[in-house]
Image (cartoon, rainbow, N blue to C red; front, side, top):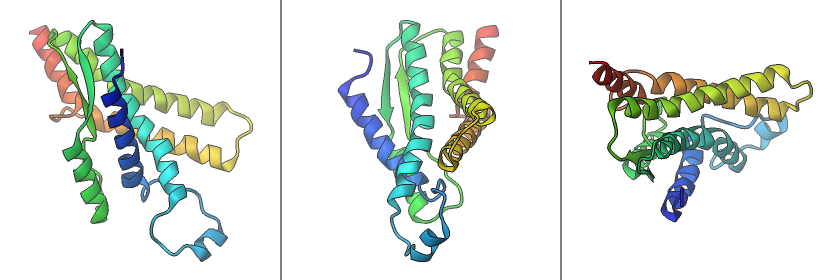
Length: 187
């Protein structure tokens, strides 16, 4: 089996937690009526929107690592990192203006440095592809509702941010794994 029950449970937990963490950053468009009746607290619509925008960007990123590793014949297990999710929750609870956390990772079996570099690049590459898809749809779809346009715009933005951030050559980000594994493979 390519995805285990445990991985599905971890994906479900990550999805809910990511929706909660990002619901204050990814908000549904509001009308004047919404603003007049809004009393603060938990906004279910923003929570659902954050799940639709943020969770796929992060989970698909991690699954790209897993499936590229599997394609090379390696063992690869996706895991939610509960400390990283907890850190994100704490930052949200204290209304931090920045979000720094690692919600999950993929344990990968031993491989060559070049293969590890390719696996590390797979996640950010997926974010770049999702950014490109969103950009393409925004620029080429002729009829789109305001809600649909906002969804694609937010999807485009979060995937661009994830691509850029993850490609920074700073441990433990993917960019450092790509760079250091390529250097080891070459030298």
